[in-house]
Image 1 (cartoon, rainbow, N blue to C red):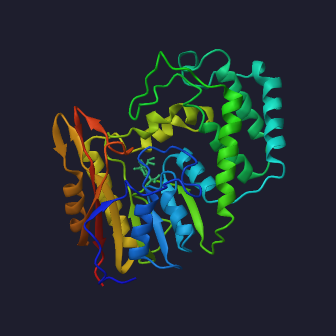
Image 2: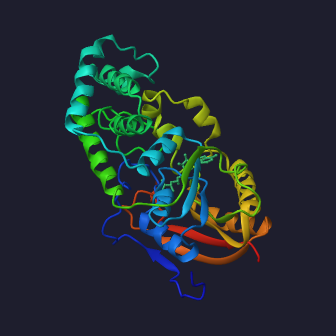
Length: 366
Ligand SMILES: C[S@@+](CC[C@H](N)C(=O)[O-])C[C@H]1O[C@@H](n2cnc3c(N)ncnc32)[C@H](O)[C@@H]1O
């Protein structure tokens, strides 16, 4: 690491050739970080053998980039779907005769589909056509029979992946889910095969990246790092929700219900749609915890964008800088991450697009 190295203030990755290399593209997790941004940050601020925390880990972008650099990473998120995706993203698996394997799952599901109980799904008549809800549950039941945990996880992600295409949900939703009356939904079994094969092919690429790093995921709130000792961590990389921009517990509701994950628990622990003062209190606690676990001279990197409410900006960037200073950090750098309007994280708010994010580099003194 070379702290004297000049790094540009404006970061723009829109022209980056491919953001879905390795397993980065296996699941559309809204607000996912661009891997090139994570790569640049890790290359600048940590070294192989270091241990970092990604405390709003989401779909595991930071963990995967750490893994290929032999950096140890603890990823935490309160959403068990995020944890599941992250585990699959960082776990090489191999299945002999994958096509036959998947065909056996499909034929098992077809035999059982009409007997399936769908009462645990959220308003199945509203969201699914014909017998599609039963087919999805039949696939879930087949996957539940698998004893190998890694293969089971991989197939659950493949299944969660198709709830959008196979339901009436409007694909443009990032907040509250609504029905798209004109939508042509896709065939459940064909979509499952396509999803499973595509993820499988991505996972095979991981085999080229033998890693010595330890990667762990914990379902835990970002403000609780009780798993880490004082002054034991080389970097905390935080990418919190942009308050009311993406409502995580809502947007993945169909997938979490299908996978029988606890929606009410996710909803109560998720800070993506809380009131501003509650969110800021939570972030202060989170930064205080980050300060505690970081070694002296090490950094907390926070990626955040401003948001908009009733026409005015909610200046989360400024609020976060003040909170970081309040808990003891020095602000070493601020980079602006520019995005174009098509980028997933740009949210139109009453006709306004917000296309800047801050990469705040906060340092614990030596
Ligand atoms: C902007 S996303 C992070 C995306 C991630 N960087 C990626 O590349 O996939 C914010 C994440 O915060 C998570 N989250 C919400 N409330 C949380 C909490 N109390 N503790 C930890 N994570 C939380 C959401 O589930 C979501 O995955």
